[in-house]
Image (cartoon, rainbow, N blue to C red; front, side, top):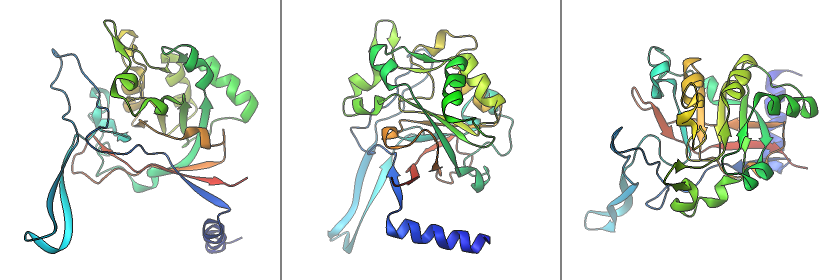
Length: 263
């Protein structure tokens, strides 16, 4: 079958509903949970603000539009390599220089929801990934690896989503060897349903924050605050995650979508 015929068949299946579009994105607004950093490290990202320019009034009688104030890493967002010191030297590591073809790729969804429900500090290890591959098939080069925890169900409450106490935040994520392993497999990126791509306690790992440290060192990408991963199969979905083309951007909110064959 030619590429044109394949695309034509895909279009027919999309229009007929044989292929479903699943929204993996949390609402973005003033109530969006924002990551909190230790005060000695950095100023916190501001809360999302939406301001009206006009809405069918004397400032614009026929149109409505807004202006926004938000951080690059707010809500469901894409982490570019330049976000982390280990990825700072890549010329194609900004949101405006990453090849567009890298924003569309197959997704591997590893279900850790039961483990995360029982332990908010649960870590997915390389052995855990291998066990998943033994059941569902190998992770291919250029594919996303997504950790399903159903943490998005906490997204309506910043306190529950951050889940912090006197010892810092507690949320599931990858171990160091997990990230090392998926990079060996050639993954294009790592995604989670938590506020960041690392576990809440990842600052104490070696290296600290391995998802950020190692993924961006390899000129690969991160996705955080994903939603609805329970609606995706372990394999077979196509992930579309395109950041805004911000000049020298370190990341961007995205409307992450998955194309899923309907059962």
